[in-house]
Length: 468
Image (tube, rainbow, N blue to C red):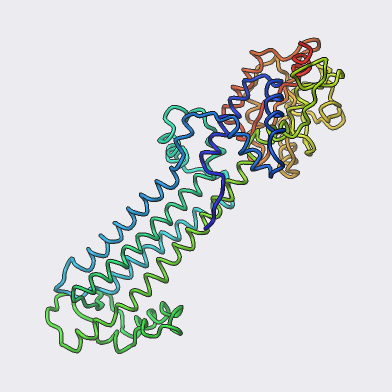
């Protein structure tokens, strides 16, 4: 069976831990994560990140997700089984004086389920083509509903935008699991009832449907198994001899015997057109859900920063005992917070570089590579088109001493949600980024302008902490 060491609770734990780390000093995070990384054996990024979470061992409301996937799946399967039993029992036992109408049987157990499968396919295709697709009413968002029910205390703090794709795939998986057990319950009930109760099948319709036309349609339905299970097909003679009128109360012995011959075909129809498609879709959505968890875990906003801090070498000197040494050249906090060895699209928002003199080289940036933004709407739209086309990390240099404005939020909403964005706070000359300024920008980042937005300080806090 498909398995994964990553579960939904791990995504929530990661989200909560990264948000907690935003209020901690960068120097403290570097020391902590380098120590954890040095003790971990060489593993894949996913395993190292999972081990980092386990090392922190922070327990909060997110731990309630432990086992929730299995428990909800179990109850949905049980509910589906019960629904299948009740549906088949109601159809076969509601009126035993009349034959079971084959057309009604196929409509309920094949036609209706195919309509639901088509709806599921349309929803899944829409989400695949547009991962930003939202429901018409925000209150109907299944991810939002699910987490508000599960995390009554912390739902407002969790970045639902990051968890929504995984939760939607999980809901699709649960839906197919319900369908699989619904059909299993229906088939089991049908066999039991046919074993203990004498039931017959026929067909009746107010519409003028000829036996030949119905036989052709049934032959088309039986094509998948006709070559290896001919006993589960119907002949023209069977169709002709089992038509009855709704008010008919007496049937000949030959007609009654013929009416008993329908059940192999009906069982084959439920198995081939209801049970198997549900089972295949369940496996597919389950695989996609697990793959999404593994990818989302490593690509989670802020996860690359954690991996970079863990992978950085830990160096101790006599001058700074019990601390990681930084060169006296004065690496900035931003140099250690931005992901290393990644292509970047750098922007200076509203003239952020004109009033400051940052050491861009230490951040892997140069003035020539930093583009101006926030000055002209038409140029900003061209920048957005280029950003979404190049698919690089986006670093936006902003003035830390000025409050964030709505224009920046509008610009961030135009950036693809699949790209990592960093707000690099630039301080005034001669001073660092004040704590209250950092808090203001962190609150701005939590307002949902972009799902993968991280605030990074561009001051010298890291070097200052070492010298203290």
